[in-house]
Amino acid sequence: MSRLDDALALVAIDSVSRGEAAIAHHVAVVVGRNPDLDVERIGDNVVARTTGHHATRLLVAGHLDTVPGDSSAATIVGDELRGVGACDMKGSLSVMLELASTPTPRSVEVTWVFYAREEISRSDSGLLEIAELRPELLDADAAILAEPTNGRVEAGCQGTLRVMVEMTGARAHTARPFAGRNAIHRLGDVITKVASYEPRATVIDGIEFVEQLQVVDIVGGVAPNVVPDRATCTLNHRVAPDRTKDEAGSWLIEFLAEVTDEGDTVRVVDWAPSSPPSMANERLTTLVELTGEAPLGKVGWTDVATFAELKIPATNFGAGDPLLAHRSDEFVTLAQLDQFATVLTAWLQ
Image (tube, rainbow, N blue to C red; front, side, top):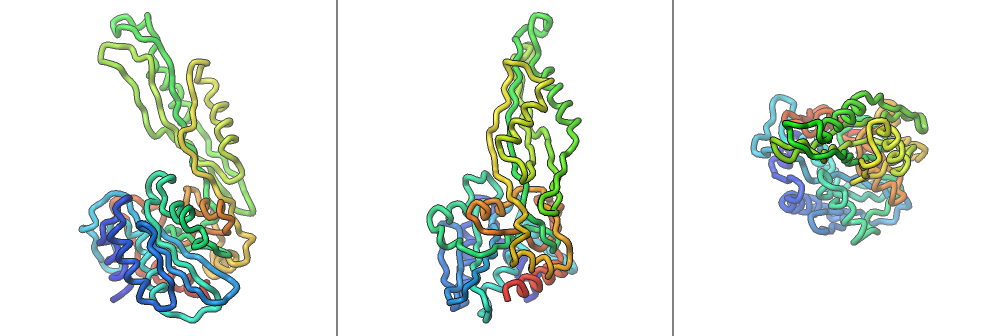
């Protein structure tokens, strides 16, 4: 079988978030073929580790779940594998499985982590489940998170701040709107303000991060004949690693000050922390050298931030174009899988 066939076998297993039991079983069986690995299944997470006497331990992690889609439609066309999760991130998972299941002499210890529920709320993450129940299994000197990165290092990650803005008004009959105050109309000023946002860019350890701000949800209205007295919108703010949750929240409140009044509220409802680039780590510097390309900053949020909280230097590196992630036409190519396998093999030596 080719690498595309191996990846197709994974894509064909439906594993939408919270439905990873079947793929976790498959992974556990495959890595269990390597007698050099200690394999543990923790819920729908699988951890496989060598347990020799080398001083250095490297960790490679990837999530088992995908966004919703029809896994039965997965197919190989030429040198491309098309299907939900092909790019994010079952192509990389298939390479991880290939390398993990093959007994290979190395001068380092290796931990392979396959975890559940990455694509939904961070509080549900299988990686956090492992960290809570068996934190020692995640001990490592450096880690790779195999998110799609086009085969180059994407260092660190931005935090993601979700904020709810609630605008107040006063109810009235729509025939006499002058007797009230339309909260939805007021919300229009917030939307216009956010649409005018110019992304902030900052350079950290030579890596550029570009922040973003978007309106992602709107709720309002009472009845067809009532001027609404409440309206809310949800904002998503991608935050560079040089700012904390409180700093980003304070900036956002100030940014919206000219379009909000005293009775309005700007409330943080979710936060996932950012991670610095960690490019001073020797093992991650070596990874950059092996790719032959300068690193970029990770504009999205990934579990590199989780590893940072665990004091483990980590970076994003995987097969596939990140711009294809979560799209209905996502795909990964054989060349991308081969390049990922070559670099990862060399790094683990």
